Image 1 (tube, each protein chain N blue to C red):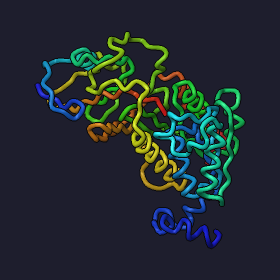
Image 2: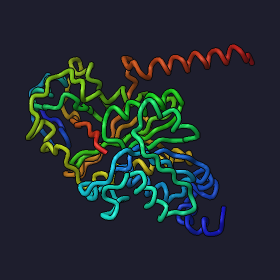
Image 3: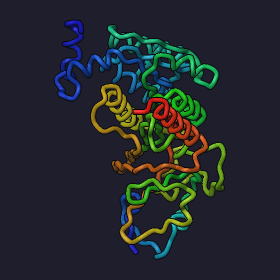
Image 4: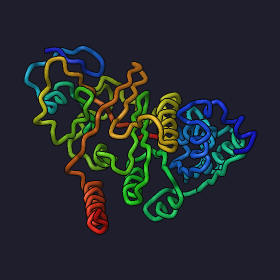
Length: 66
Length: 276
């Protein structure tokens, strides 16, 4: 299925949770912030939050420099 | 308001949302800028130029040559000098009609309560989690608003926290020093599609986020518009995308939930003490 991932169209397998999406995209930052359809998702919800067709997903690497 | 002040601020006083009353609020305000680095430099410049009455700028570091690509308060001639003093001199040259207080110190648990006396708002220009943690907890305790900003490479994030926000800083950002998940790749391409910038940063990245923070500060001080409270803004400079995400309460936050509970209890007690 197709999602918008970081502003780009990407094809991913159906039925993934956010946790599995992190694995799928090989995201290496353990502190990555995940935004699903403009909503901040807490890490404790990654395992139960399903990714749906046409979802807009952003992986945001928290930037703590000043 | 003095005649030359009304000229100096005329372009913003012309804005109906600000007007003379808003300018007087700015003039009567005290802000603390935590850090005179990339973010602190730009927010300090904008807020000094806007006529915030008292700007306290805190930094314990010295100016280095590698700072000058983005820390626009400092000059070649101030390399080696304390950033707080270098910043105060620059700001004083920009606006001599406001009070500027440089504090050459590291903001920590031991000094933050004293530094926040009389402060209306804190602007974050720090470069680490721990100092932001200190600011977050102090602001929760004192019921003060603060504006978070963070930058790296071409990217930055920002949001505003005010008393009554759905979240606090520690709800949404975890301590990078205490990782619960193993980091699989320390360098190269990550899943988010950006090359790892390490400690690198382009000046305009800090400029964009600092400008957002300065805008938030003016809005909160004047009490106008819609702030970033309960929203996180993310700027990706390399592909020029800006997204905002809605923040929802974190019931597991051990930092802000006890404060919120205490506030609710106090409100209930006050209601019971003053029955209508």
